[in-house]
Amino acid sequence: MRRSLKIGCVWTMAGCCTRWTLPILLWSLLSLASAALCSLGLYFSNWLQRETKDGNFNSVSSFRLCLNESTQISASCDSYFTFDEIFSLEWQAVTILMGLGACLLVFTGLISLFTLCAHRFCNKCLVCMVAVLQCLGVLLSIAAIVVFPFGIDSKMVQHPDLCGESAGSYELGDCTIGWAYITVITGTTLGLVAVALSWTPMMCNRKNNDGGSYAL
Image 1: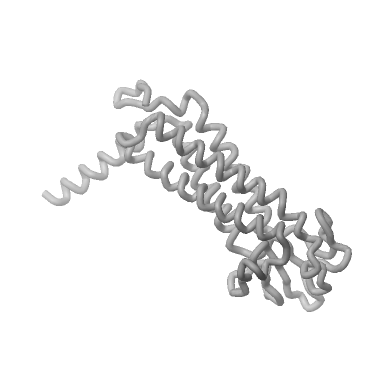
Image 2 (image 1 turned 90 degrees about the vertical axis):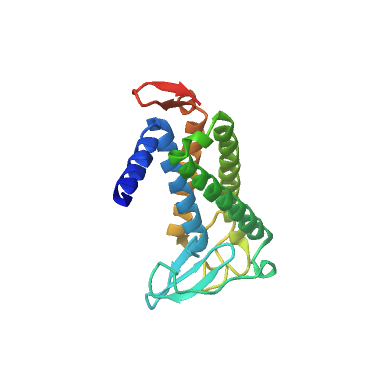
């Protein structure tokens, strides 16, 4: 009896998920990928990095500094700044913008996942609301990406152990763009595609059990 009930529940969930059209499945996957990549890039300090003479890596983000790491992944680094310790006003703004943007992208990513198998609670109004929040998250992330290079002219970033005196606004000096910064850019780009997809007319249609479609 219990086994039959479990099989029935799984079958019902599978049928529920397959009612969605390809655009909304793609939108959900893009939303989740965007949220994951932006959160990952925000956590690690490898926005700017420099390889030292002994083969170690120094890296810095808007609120995190890691020195003498043996790999380019600063997972073991626990050096965080308080808000007042952040090197420049620009990077303080980046911390706020990227933090809010990542939170919104994670929230909308979870909502998009919920809509896959709880379609009865989803309607056109919900999709539009999530799309607006997602768009705001993407815009905040874009702002953080654009503002971040302006903070490179900070005296702390121009330290010889980091980017050197030749570093400045949009001038890397002795540093290179780190993988975490590229990850944030990639996640934001995926979020931008998801936003564009969420406003297409195809997002307002779902498949019924007969293979047809009906409006949300």
